[in-house]
Amino acid sequence: MTIISDITVPARAPYSAVLKAGQIMRIVDLKSQQAVDALFYNAQDTTERYSAQDTLAAQAAKGWRYDLTTGSVLLSNEGRAMVRIIADTCGFHDTCAGACSCESNTVRFGHETRFMHSCRENFIAELGKYGMSKRDLVSNVNFFMNVPIRPNGELTVDDGVSKPGGYVELQADMDVLVLISNCPQVNNPCNGFTPTPIQIIIRDA
Image (cartoon, rainbow, N blue to C red; front, top):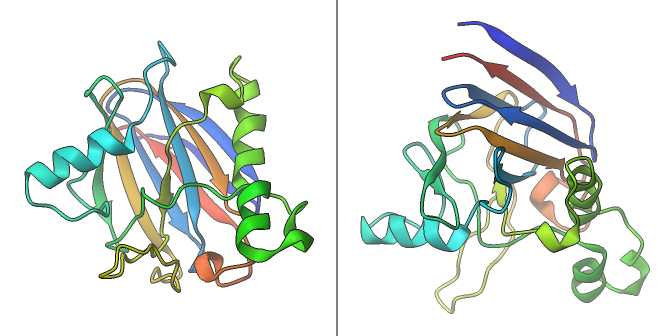
């Protein structure tokens, strides 16, 4: 195995990289309980991008749960495999709750949180590097984020279950542009109320 890159992404910061077909990205939760939001685009044609709806519909057809873990295949809006989860020490990753934003912070936590930094801002900043804008924001994955669905259908953000050094590994089925927001949220327990750094390792298979 050849390591292509090995970097530490600071707490609250964005990151992006192109993962070539066959390459593997390991996302490491260094301190535990750190949500990592991610977007995926076909690196050759960014109009093809991750679809949570198609991904979960395909899982439901197989009788799988609504969360993501080892064996989950992340599908595009064209129904094609983008990346697949090949290893996972956490066992639960969310793709229903979306990314935090200034607007959602205000609604959920009060007007005093209106100008707190958010994942949506991180994503917009990274999208700009590739000629895209907020119009290109789509549904995302929240790695390490614990979002149980209550019997009444309510989504709840609970304490994260990842341990220090916990990781998830993604293998690309196509050349994929991966955008990461190392979530800055401090108003709910998705980050244990204290955002921390993560490590991202990209390697050949």
